[in-house]
Image 1 (cartoon, one colour):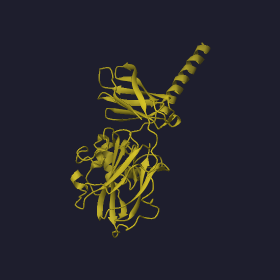
Image 2 (cartoon, rainbow, N blue to C red; image 1 turned 60 degrees about the horizontal axis):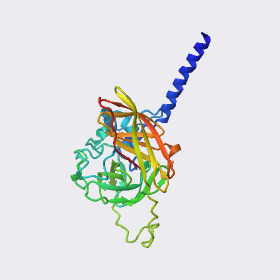
Image 3 (cartoon, rainbow, N blue to C red; image 1 turned 120 degrees about the vertical axis):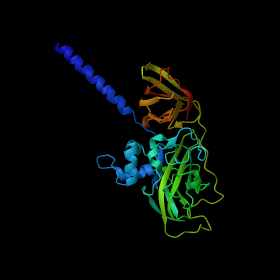
Image 4 (cartoon, rainbow, N blue to C red; image 1 turned 120 degrees about the horizontal axis):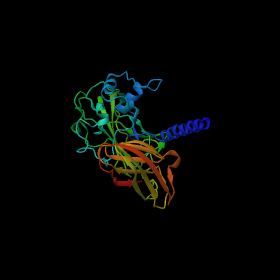
Length: 345
């Protein structure tokens, strides 16, 4: 009996350890980055409310109200305002009144029209060093827009409130330094409270990230320089070298299913001649499906679109090599789960 008891205890411990290991491999992520300087609403409220015990209790009234409406998870996921089907689109795609959430219901509380969101004070017409936190770096570019002089922060933000052309574009994307994209540009000649609207579009997928940064312009305007600022490359400088093209194939396979859930695997193969760094697999699932756990990669989800990114230890995929990640999901549908529009990069 003692031997049987010992075996039972060891078996139970093994199950617990296996479960903890599986959980440790899962790193939940709803997205990949946002503006940190000037701070986006989600990042500003996150830093405003984060306590020494890693709880979020915002002091700013607008942030506190957003938490009361939508909870704290959107702030723990401050980097997550995205549309997986964005394709760099703005006007006519993101609905009026939903610009700050990118049309993502999870962040709807941050669309609130009010004049007390945390704001960054800036000098009109001055050069500014923008910082865009890169939770997961991707190739692509940035466009920054500004609200018109007639902007009223107490009314819902619409596309009619935004200047039609970006005041700053960074394409291709700047290098990542200390976990963030950093690029400089001249601020518009504005006064008072405005919103800088950031759009980060990927060149290797349809994913697009959106964000509202509340700013207050003060000081005097500075005219544009008559010559390039110090450190700018001469006009004759050659363009940066184009990296070798990457090519891959991917499949998502149902491994097991039960009432209310299933297990599946996602496999990518590098079919090109150059390594793939920070690979990803993306697919579309039936409505009502929610990814609950993943291993051998980091998972994210936006509506019916699921994605797994490489883990830190398997981020590089050599030519001809393959990688497989697994995930669990819950579902409200009775039909066998299907996976369509599978893509990779």
